[in-house]
Image (cartoon, rainbow, N blue to C red; front, side, top):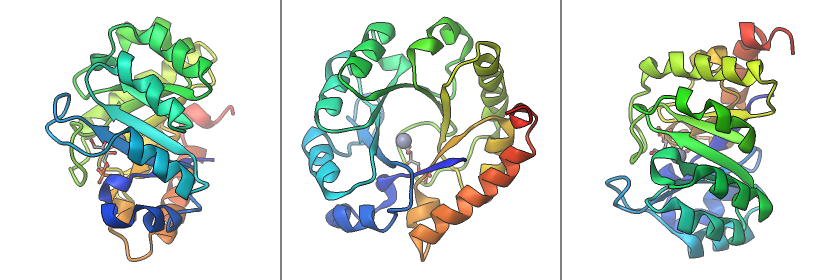
Length: 227
Ligand code: DX5
Ligand code: ZN
């Protein structure tokens, strides 16, 4: 079944605990950490992740859009994140970092900006629990989905199948009722949605609707037919 991860970047930061509770049917809560260097925006860090983890039963999916990921990512595991995503462009030693995240007890995930190809990372995929393909340039919520990323999603799904990996394939950026089916058909199985969830009158219903759309599209997708 498709997993839907609402991004709290589009939530009210003054009411984070309530906003987390508003989407308790979601699989994970997506937490965007930005440092104003890797991306031109600044959001939150370790203390808020720690506090948020105590305020909700939904596991935290921390997306680190920060430089020097090797140094900081393990601290997000210690802060309670169930999944930690570092950017390939920001990690000096991605294999060592993924192993450290796993050893500390979280799922290890790596993200690719739109201009970063998947092919150089094929041999690293077994070291990861999830790969995140950005479908906007990272930094802000509410941007338009980049259709030009669909071939990369397809190629990544082919690599996952070729190697028989249990790797989740996440998409993040511009995912909504208008675009989620395309992502699922191409091979994504974990969907981040910020404005499409928190911009809705009923965020919990938006999560259910997105999951239903993704599940129908996945069932019809060529990559999922033999599963
Ligand atoms: C963007 C963030 C996303 C953002 C998505 O850099 O990584 O997680 O919150 O927001 P929407 O779904 O509104 O594009
Ligand atoms: Zn994100």
